[in-house]
Length: 114
Length: 111
Image 1 (cartoon, chains in turn green, blue):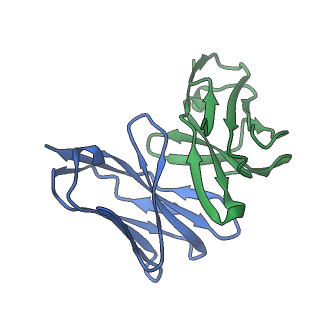
Image 2 (cartoon, chains in turn yellow, red):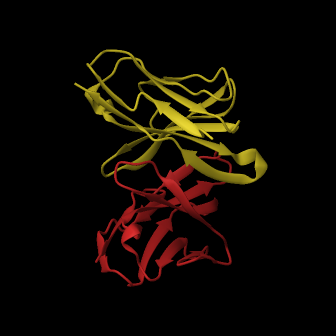
Image 3 (cartoon, chains in turn green, orange):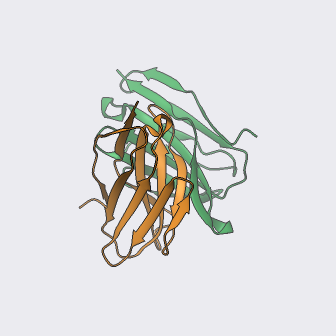
């Protein structure tokens, strides 16, 4: 039972480079989410998706792009990484349509932008 | 104003103690409520949902006060393994299943 996985787990990149963080879930949950977690801010929603090919902005979407061509995958791309995007990124999924809105999180990706 | 506010702590309590955390939310359209637990450098994990009538899961009791817009978590007979950060989480109606997270309350249980 793989659940929800993220890759890479750790990434160091340089300012200006494009970076893609991967998220994969095996539960066929309809909803998927990307958060970033920084000290003093808690978890902040970047983007979310209600189903394949349906995405929407969260609280802090600037500088990020998402896509969802398949239900199980929800990649997050930093188009031109900046130091302020150094953070821990968590992907989550939810089976809200079943009446259970709880979100389940992947293990996170620690991204450092130098 | 933040959607969800929590006392960051830290709370340092001896083993066996009872400890309570409170959380307030600002949006009266908040619909679902949860407590998540997050261990250091790990992902948040669902601890329990919070129901209007209050609910209990072993040593953990959650309460919801809609009139005052606050949620509480009570931990009885604290164990060393309860040391973690506890996140108060709210889902607001008609926001596409978006969750709003508090910044968390840190708990350390001391032997």
